[in-house]
Length: 119
Image 1 (cartoon, one colour):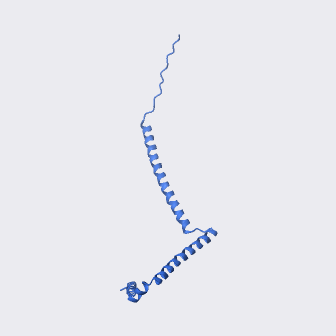
Image 2 (cartoon, one colour):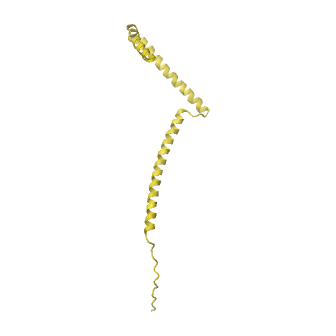
Image 3 (cartoon, helix red, strand yellow):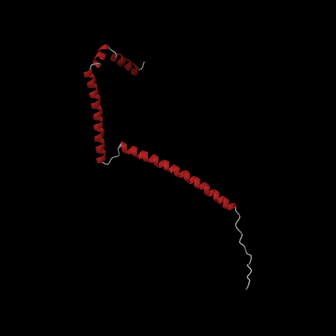
């Protein structure tokens, strides 16, 4: 049995004990747990805001900025692929036109002299 499995097994036994169940069913304990969880989330949000503010003031790139750049690069790559496909299609059309022109015999110039009539 691995250490992780033993720890999970022990924690579940403790969590299911009648004393712990009684304590966790107390509304004041539940409220304290929720307050602790919310305080943790609020603190993380505050820290994140401070980091973004400092990064902005120091002209540093943030993870949000990197995400925007990656999104723009993906869009630009998609546009480039579309344009390359269009170019390939146009090149094929141009090659077909050149081939058709090369097969077509050149028009012969008429060298017959016109007769001139005097009135």
